Amino acid sequence: MTRPRREQERGTVPRWPFHALLVLPAAAYLWSGSYPGRHTAWWLVGVLGLAAGALVWAGRLVANRVLRAPWSWWFLVAPVAGALVLGLAVADGPLRARWELGRGELDAAARRVLASGNGEPTPLRLGTYTITSLEPVPGGVLMDEATGDGGTGRAGFAYLPEGGLQRLADEGYLSLSWWRPLGDGWYAWSDGS
Image (cartoon, rainbow, N blue to C red; front, side, top):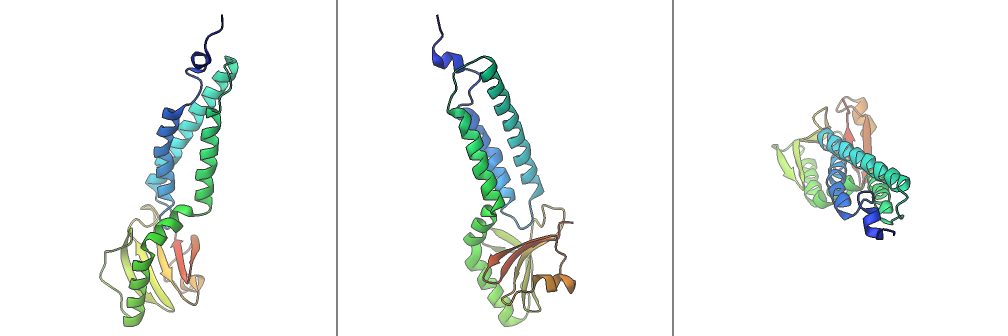
């Protein structure tokens, strides 16, 4: 007598509770990418959690095949979700989305600094970022973000309408190990030290 399908799958198929648990490390990993540079603590939580989930998923897949349990579409959920998370991270989706949320406030602060030629008192909350330095530089404005490169270095944003981020690095205003253009003269940067 054969056991019902549900009983055969029990313990081998990663169903919704397994996938729901993976939302937390996936969110931590994506949140780490929403900072200029990378927030190391959130990145580590995300990577370790996702790695543990991948190991459990692989173990369940092997158990399912060894026990010759019926195949289930649930095995496709984690790889598809993982590809989506990886795609968002590679495309800088979290950084760009979070940046757009506060863009109006960041633009206004940059315009004030350009108009006055002076920095502003900090720390200053602009959008969802805490800015610890807001200073005029040749050709634009340089902002340091509070978390920097996850506590390992300096990171932030630069508003340079005519470009010139590498020029600022060459002149010693910042060092660059990573940077991304955000559009309309804005850049995210990190010194990665």
